[in-house]
Every structure is written in C-alpha cells, then in structure tokens.
Amino acid sequence: MKYDEAGKPVGIHSVVVSAQHGEAVSHELLDAFIRCTVIEPVIDSRWITPETRIHVNPTGRFVIGGPAGDTGVTGRKIMVDTYGTVGKHGGGAFSGKDPTKVDRSAAYMARYVAKNIVAAELADRCEVALAYVIGGIEPEAITINTFGTGRIPDSHIEELVKSVFSFGVSDYIEELNLRTPQYLKTAAYGHFGRDDQGFRWEETDKAWLLKQLAF
Image (cartoon, rainbow, N blue to C red; front, side, top):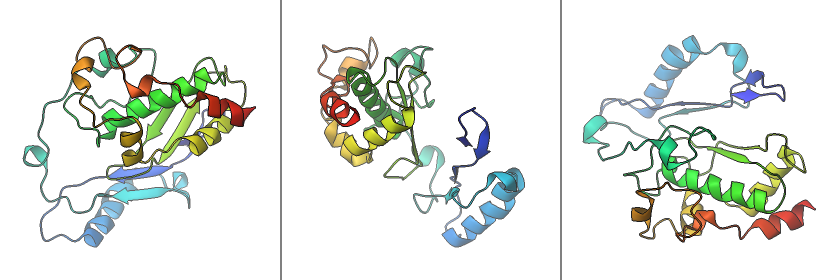
C-alpha cells in the first residue's frame, strides 16, 4: 500500500502473486487467470493506479514447489535475533538461509543504513524498511522513518540513502561480505548490536558521506 502523511491509504504500490502451476501452463495464461480470478475480484479498483506494479510469478515458471522445491532448516524466532518488540520485521527467519534470501540479507542492509543515518546525526532514531518481490534485484520500496527525530525531512534522508548505498541484492552481498563464513557467531546473542564480532553491517563508515551531503 501507499499512504499519505496522515497514514491513510491512497493506493496500492505493488501486487505480488506466486502460484505453482502445471508444466503445460504458459506464463501468459497464468498471468491472465490470476488477474481475472484473484486480483480483480479481491482488490477494489479504486486502489489500483497507473503506477501500481503487478507481479505474477516474477521469477518465471513455478512448476516444482512445496517440499520438493524448497527444503531446508529455518525458523528461529526473529524477534530474538533482531530487536525484540522495538522494531518492525518482515516475518522471515534468518537461520538456514543463504545471503541471496532477502529475509536475511536485506535485514542486514537495513541495519547498516539505519546505523549510518544515526551516526551521521541525521536523526536520533531510525527505522529502514526495504520491500522486495521474489526474484527482484532492486527493492520495490525504501522507507525511512525517524519517528520525528530527524534533523532533515525523512523524504530527504531517503534520497540521500539512495545516492550513497546500493540496494541491489548482489551489490550489498558484496558490500557487507555476506558470503564470508561468519554466521556461527549469530547463533546466540542476536545478529545486531554486537560491535565486537566483526560484522560488516554494524559499521558506520558511510556516516561521513551522508553528513557531508545532508549539510
């Protein structure tokens, strides 16, 4: 959803549907079927705007699914691994997922950006939200919330962030050294707020640039 400054919904930013299908079903047929039987009956047309993005199986064909296509161990309580009840989270656990899964890697990137915003003295508090669709390379949305503590408008901080950081998944996997064996250290005591473990996402090396561009 898209919201105005008062928090009222003003339209739908993106609709994402991933549906498993038979081998003989083409993407064009599935797309038309999902639009007419799922999206159009469920979503009031007044919320659909010319800017609304609709993604049906954005990764392509989805013939193999369920346990045969997506097995693995995951499910540690994400509230324990992150911020408790203080910050919002996307719901996807970290453990058992490699860095290409944005449930894990985008959470690290959001942490990195938020720390640099605060270190740059652009705000006293900051929450960074990144929204991706499955198979997407760049985020559908980047949202900055400083809870009224920002020294410049949140919209300005958002533009600065986009100019300083790269939010392509492969880019920040490299930026944050996420392919480096290091995750055993996250098995206890959480993934964030531990400056003594060498986690790249805890560094504030971009704060000087944000501050320079802001002021």
